[in-house]
View 1 (cartoon, rainbow, N blue to C red):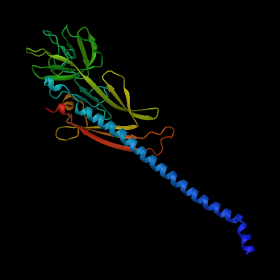
View 2: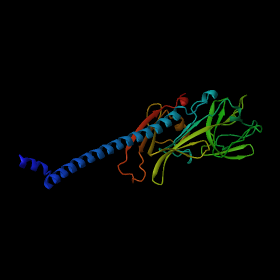
View 3: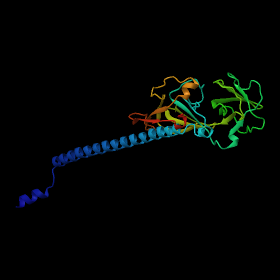
View 4: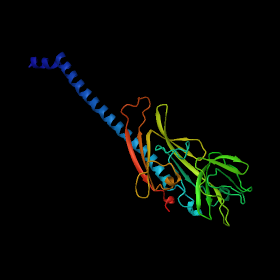
Length: 293
């Protein structure tokens, strides 16, 4: 009896304590490893969700702007002007870029200040091939600046063309790029007009290793819109559903019936070097309803 009580009072041996310590260490390491993997999984899931949210927001916003491109055309009953330009507006209209887009609309068709009546009785003003027109001397040119988009519209014939302003000399408005394909002003009781336009542009850029989507409205500076966008790819389709791989003429631009955009994005990790970042794609499609004749 006394021998058994003395043995119990003696406690654990060193070997037993070492065995217990090893067992607890193994269990602790396993639990820590499990928790780290769970944390990595949750972080990865969060990154994927964040990247998906970014690319979806980018594609959906662009698609929304495509759907309303040319807004205000119905007020003038203008059909199929070249309101979609497949570049960021910084290169010639005859240069097709698949990673940028310019979308053009009329700001407020009922505002008289957005309409510039062309001068009448000017011989050769706006003949085919010209790159200069003369507006009426009563026109308000306040706020009109180089690079601004205008639409030349003749209500008598229904002819129209989008041009970019390159110079203002008195009341002469000068253009480059596409030459005028219709005569302005044409015969008729209503004078031809130059109508001020809005322009929204998108492009993808990478600066300092960080990719992002940029958005620009009219002559404002480019604004960093959504971070993590690594690819922006536009595809254009005609009314038959055939992809248009080269869009370099007015006729081709006016024939755009559907725009599909694919956005690819990553979740940025500051200071991580970018390894193992979430990488997702999102596609969206839009029909520019104002351009349908």
